[in-house]
Amino acid sequence: MTSPRKVIYSVGASLDGYIASPDGSYEWLERETRKAKGEDFGMKRFFASIDTVIMGRKTYEVGVKHGMAKNGFPGMRNYVFSRTVRGGSRYGVEFVSGDPLKLVTRLKRQPGKDIWLCGGGDLAREFLKRGALDEVGVGIVPLLVGAGRPTFPPGFAQVGLELVECKQYPTGVVVLHYRIVPRGRHPAARPGRSRRVPRGDRAARAGRRR
Image (cartoon, helix red, strand yellow):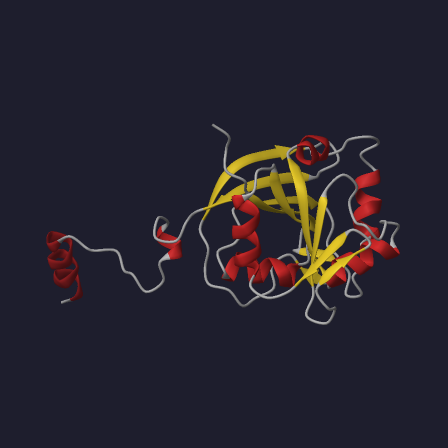
């Protein structure tokens, strides 16, 4: 029996939580990772586990500007979310819009490997809000950039995570891989719920307040 497909948000980020500069560029990330002199930080293994890529329009355009072909990542199905570009196939890339959960549900019904959500942060936020994300992988580079596009922009409810893997590399890069805990299973994902205090403890606390 094959394992169900997962949607994984996997990105490189600065220690202060940015995945790109304010203009969307990421030269600082490339500069820091080049110091590894051949280390791929587990990306070869990761790419072998996926066959579909989802990204936002801005991420797609920045990628093309930095040398990515217009048909996206080779050997994979590429989807680009956009509110401004008309939906449909162009250059071998499928432009889509609307509810990300609908796309994810459709993709998961099809056979295949895992699905990579490669950015940006605004799209990752929408995936979180709709419960369309299964795992998060962040490669943290030892750099504070001060400003930029955050890994997770604000605007979503609290989400519980379980650590799957943590690996440190000689250059100071730390790769963290988390599994998202379904709502209702993790205490942190249940806002407004208070832990029940045993009757004896309540009486003891009341005595201390007198």
